[in-house]
Length: 556
Image (cartoon, rainbow, N blue to C red; front, side, top):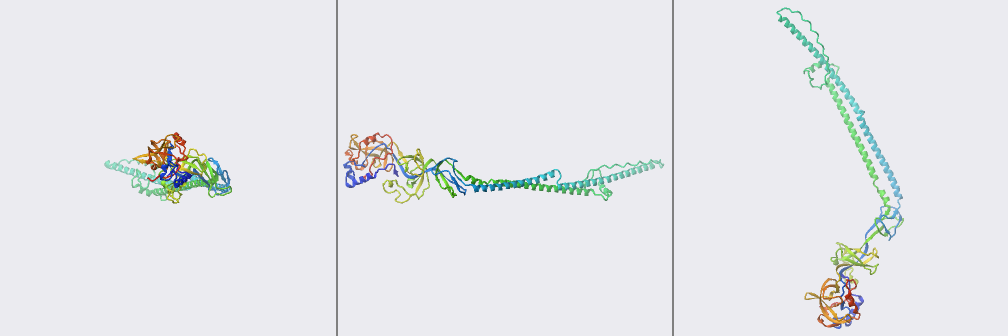
């Protein structure tokens, strides 16, 4: 862990070690007997304490866009330069499209011809289908018309055969009537002769000739069926009377059936022809639709459109990778959306567990010097990499060995920090040094962590109680304190008997046996006014800690 406040200034450290090696006051185990030297005391002040992880990173935009083109032609014009601000839909560059325009014209002509041919095929197929339907509807179709004529002829023959067979039956009935009447006359004559006792009766008048009935048209019988009102033996009798040169009813009916079957076959064939023509119409329509779809491929149109490049976002042009006359093989230019800025950094594996999303961050950039900016942690990657170099803040400040064990690399975890508040002066790609604050106590007294010791389960410190603000000596007193946030250097005192402006002894083990004794401050740079300033401090501060030495505590 790196603290937000480091104890040492290199010059003071060197002086402290020099004094210790020479046996002068403040150095070694006997320093406490000679007074409080530089680095032996701290003036408690309400600066607050925070713990943090120090990282280095780069400023990046919230998003960046690399613009490329599939058009393989020369860059005709470039309208922007690196550093220019652009708006959405602003013209950035244009490419030569003469060859594409020619190809597009040829393609359009070919597509128009293909569509015209497809439309002509539809019209022809539809015309054939319409002609067939019309010929069927008005009875002019050749095959159906011929078959219908055969049916009509067969029907006439059949009707004639039926009529002929009906005339024979009428003559037969007349013969039968005459025969019956003759029989009746003969019976009457016999009765007259024998019934009168042998007398010869007067001759009866001759019977009038029976009228010959007029034949009526008979219904068309179905061959094999018995005609109503005729005995079953009539057909045989009729056959005897049928003209030898005529066609029988059965033959005429069979011929009629054959003709009707031919008509049905002709109509079925015409229906198959109609279905085939309808299929040709449908196929022609599909061909036309396919030609329209091929026309809508849009590859050349897209390339022509892509030849004029517009900005997809508002932002800053970060690079232009081609010149006028070049044929781009990759990226043409890049645009960064700097409406929001982020810092991309990496954290050591040992520190990543102490960082949380939304941790407050303070940072400075190389370009802006000591100006401090604010941010917050927005992302901590759960996947680390072993390629990053370890940067130990203690090593940077000359504080000792790296926590990485001296190895050149360690596992690092990417983190993202969003810049909040002021962004003035921050440059894209600029370097920053950021402190991710993992714990913080505001408005608390700030004392060195080594100044607090435990006695009887309670935290305590030793202070030099002076008689006045200008005094340079006082009695050593023990005071109970309550502590909170701590880091490697400082600890926050949030309660107890310690007050702002008290002079806290940094190395209590050297003075615990001198409680109640009077001790002087031998530091020539001690300024009593700093005690008064500390008493008047009412808000937390991030100023450098007042400890001026990294002198180690004596062995306990």
